[in-house]
Length: 365
Length: 256
Image (cartoon, each protein chain N blue to C red):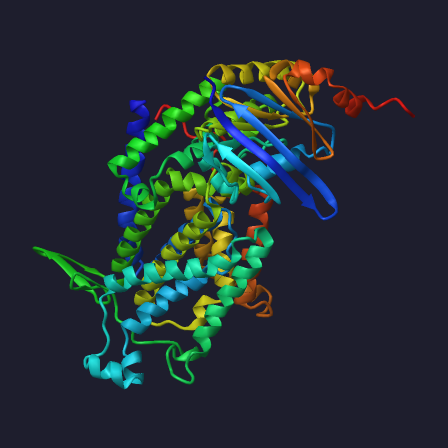
């Protein structure tokens, strides 16, 4: 028992050191591209963990999940960029220095608004199951994107396909994460790139999301969600109010999506409807399913693999492009290889890369 | 002095041209095992579904433990105090046996999202209580050793026991068992009988809907026979068995 605990502690310490040292190693490559890839992968982990609550715990297949990511991203984009002030005289008059709402306020607001939007979108779908639910949520996801695309007329709210630019970078207690920071101790000094700083911030949120997910999983509400997933009729007969519980799952999952949207907007400093296409929703669902539906380590692995694979393939694909004399473009090849990888994984490991263990946790703990 | 747990009177239900139930009424006392039997299509399941809120009756009055009870939403039924099992066992297959029973505690506990996220003291205490009670119930039905097994891996008889444990977890006033012996072999039936006997000894009340006449006659304190939606006969098993109307319904008049 104690030996097991010591072993766990050692693994934990190694993982912590590895995670903390990773961006410094990436920064040492001299370019920011790898660190950026890892940052984006962490955002995907956050999204996948949120969707896991809806799909993995409550068993509601949501194909429009990226809409909540869009809600969060646009909320920060609108509240922390010159866009609204430029287009509306009243806002210009109220905020002569431009609209720069504190990110933490936006974060809380986005979590709240995304949660409400999640419940509103969830409400009409409550009686639907499986494939029908998937089709409706797919439609809702597209509706949000099309709204963002077209709300530049008659009044310019979202700036349409051009998107919103000049979004404020993230500031943590007066510490601007969009700039380089040099840490010097005596003669020794080290410069942190913004991508590295964002890495630590995203990592913090991922850890928070993991803790939240575990706590929800082992709770009365989490068990109720899983009961609904397993057998809705039996769950009702056990006195579970399935309507409210499903809405709660939709709302909770959307909250995660909204918060990662805010982080995304502050990281990219630009949002446009293009980032929230159906393909993105499908990717997040694929991450959850490929990794191991309902199993947190699996979901994280799935997100990292599917977010990282395209970038790795970009490098690997290069010789193949030359081999075919450029007839197979790198983009086509990349998509081909990802699809192939997914098919292979699903054939070899139908329950995902890292599925939940066959028997439940030991009672001894 | 016995206490009336369930009093149902004048329940009728019509599906289009079919009168599925007409003026059915039963009264169940605490500590009784009450049997509801009848040939196929007699209205047993319809009655059960009316009682558990799945169908709305055309008429009828219900009283549960002295209080008026209106079966409306299905999820309110367990809260009111009627727990059921299903003819074709419906467990939560990918959850462990223990988790299945813990879900049964849902209606009698109250911690929500915030407690779960912050792991407050009251949350932890309630969680420990849920777990302890669930474990106790698994021991009660005799499958504690499978607590950590996913429920789908349990044998048929053990799954039935788990379903009963899950129903007991809701602290029901009345436990309604829908054909619990269906598909069981002789040994499993004997074990089921022992379990139902034990539950009755603990002064709990059971409504048993069953096809197996032998099981019902051997086990129940009172029996109601339904046929074509009508109440054919009610009384102790011995009385009902002698009733010529019952004999006719089951064996035919021999007039052909």
